[in-house]
Structures are given as C-alpha cells and as structure tokens.
Length: 152
Image (cartoon, rainbow, N blue to C red; front, side):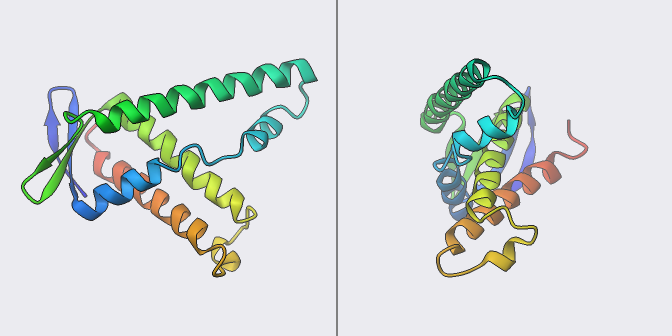
C-alpha cells in the first residue's frame, strides 16, 4: 500500500489486489468486539437503565457503521480498479472512520484470544485465525497512520 497523494480534500492510496482483498475481508468482520464486552467495560458503575441505553446506543452505532460500510464498499469512486492495482480515495474523516473499524476488528480478535498480554502465547490451530485477524488489522492501521504522517 502506498499513498499516491492528496487530491482536493481526499487522500489517494494505491493497494495491490491482495491488499484490497485483505482490507475488505477484515472490514467484513466488523463488528468484532462483543457488545456485552463493551457494555460491561464502559458501564461498570452505571445503573441498569443506563446500561440498557448504552447498549442500545452501541447497537445503533454499529448498525449505522455497517450500513455506511456497505455503501462505501459499493461506491466505485472510493475504491476503483486502476491498471493492476486499486485506487482508494478517502477524506480525512473516512480515514479516521476506517481506523475505528479496523481497531474494533483488532481489539475484538484480541478479546477472542482471551485478552493475552502476549498474543503469540495464545497461538494454536484454533486461535490462528483470530491471531491473523489481529495482526492484519494492526498492519493496516499502522500502514494508514504511517502513510499519513506528515500529510494531515
């Protein structure tokens, strides 16, 4: 993946066919953090009625993100083929949004691994897909941030 440049208010990235497939596969796993995990982690001292409101708000946000993601994937102006690669065109807010989705996938995979301090310690045949997902989501997060460093 590489940053091609800034076109108006949009960043333009170039992805290989494999990178495009991996990114879409990862985004297809959203949401990955269990709803009950976020509700309990965010609402330890909140009474039951407020916990229910928090859970509903979280579900609404996830639903909106999933709809937005499907629309974004279908938008050929955002992700289009160019020669033997793909052009990804994102506004600054879309980059932030994709980073949030990737973070959900990454953290959710870490939770599924049992929240280990050293994720590799939990690596087995059974946990390998979650470990792979954690690592690949982290790769894309780091790649976007590294490419944007100094450009935003």
